[in-house]
Structure formats: C-alpha cells, structure tokens
Length: 229
Length: 90
Picture 1: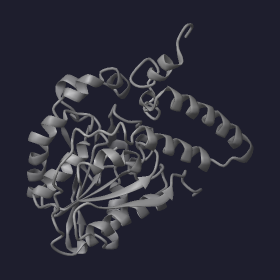
Picture 2 (picture 1 turned 90 degrees about the vertical axis):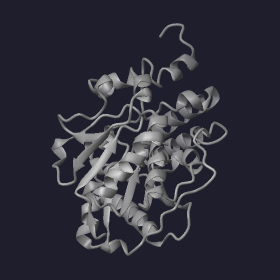
Picture 3 (picture 1 turned 120 degrees about the horizontal axis):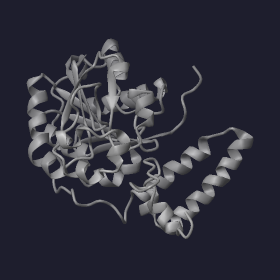
C-alpha cells in the first residue's frame, strides 16, 4: 500500500490484513532477517524455474522458521523443573495405543469448539485470534474409521492446507491403522482426539489435560502418540 | 506448547507418550521436559510429512513407536535427518 513501510508489510502477514500462517513468523524474525529471507526466496524461485529442484527452497523455509522460533526469543513461560516419565509396562505389540493431536480435526457438522468461537471459519478465526487464546480447550472425538470426507479441520494457529489435502500430515490415523494391521502396536484406540491447540494454556494445564488423561485411561489407552502443529 | 501440557498430564496419569513434531518448535517444547520426542525437519504444519507422502509419514511414525518401545529414561529425543519433500510420484 502507498506509504506502507516494509515492517508494516511484514507485520500484516501475522494476523493482519495479509495473514499467511506459513510465513507469519516473519513478523518476529526481525526486519533484517525478513528482508534477507524474501530476497533469498526470490533467488531460489529463480533457480527452481530452471532446475525444478524444490529441495533448496524447502530447506530455506524450514531453516528460517527454525531460526525464528529459536532462542533468544524462546518461549520460556512454560518451563518445568522436573521431567515426567511413565515407563512402558509391556511390549507395544500388546498395547492399545491412542492418537491425539492439536490440529483442530473434528467430525464435520459436530461441535468442535466452545460456543463463543465455534461459529468462526478458518479465515474468520485468524481475525479473532485473541478469543481462541482465551477460550476453554475443547476435545473433539474422532472415530478412527471415519472416512476422510467426513473430517473437518479448523485451527487458526497454523496453515491447514496440508491437513485439508491429507489428514495424515498432522493426524496420522491411516498410518496408525497400518501399524496396528502390521502388529507393530496391539491395536489403535477406536476414538482418536483432536483439539484446537490455540487455546487457553492455563485452563489446559490446570483443568482439561488432567481430565483428558482420565478420559483416555478409562477408554483403555495404554500409550499415546501426540502430534502438535 | 499445548501438547506439551497434555503429554505431562498423560505421563503423570501413567500413560506413556511420544510427541511427534516439527523441529522448528524444538526450543519451545524442550523446556517443558517431555518424556519422549521425535523431531522432524519438516516445515510448519506438516510434522508427519507432505500430503500423500505415505513412505515418509510411515517412517516418522515407526521412529516414534520405536522410541515409545525403547526409551528407558525421560527426555529421550531424536531429530530425524530427512528433509521435507513433496510426495514421490505414485
């Protein structure tokens, strides 16, 4: 826009007028790093035009994301003094293993969030990000044998395009079923769970996560694969 | 971060967990001292691999299950060396 500074442009990518959830981190990367990244992006795109080799481009995006989310801007609010560790009581091939993700997957048409934010589409959600951050966590139950067409995903904390193309990019229900069929795990728990990870972390840690642990324990989960986004 | 909280609650309840996530967020999760974590060198939003890259998704999951089976102490983690790629032609 006329008169817009480079900083204003970059800032608009993060829940602003040009929201782009794959590149929102450019806002926090710093002006110099953002300028460097965009210059390199154009250069690599120029290379791809001739070579068709996308690997350098992918690496560049990954490395820049890693740098943007690494110290010194490291989030240290949720720092714990002690690790927790439950040992595996028996071979995995004899266990019921469950799957839980923060990808925002749910059954199409079913409630997937508290009422105050449940009406937002993915795009609308990016404009009401603060409301998600304050909302009570909501756990969606998803039968693992549900056809992919009956899955929906809303999670304004991340770029859901890959999840929409193939749920297994973030919620590997098909891959888990294959592991059960192969006998790597005893069985896959019939209900998988997902929640919108962009939620009240205080409520999650104090109230919901312990309740969820109790719930899956009652459903016979003996181990869990957890996938954050 | 949110799954880090869930992981701790599950471990406290006696349910062993393994987290599978992009290495991009490693710094944020490591301070939460999770029991077992498999990090992938994948871009944000695609921790298991690209859409329809069944081979990569299976590999990542196998590594996670292997860690679940073999880890004998807390804060066991690995960064898988494979870089993000689009699915090989099927």
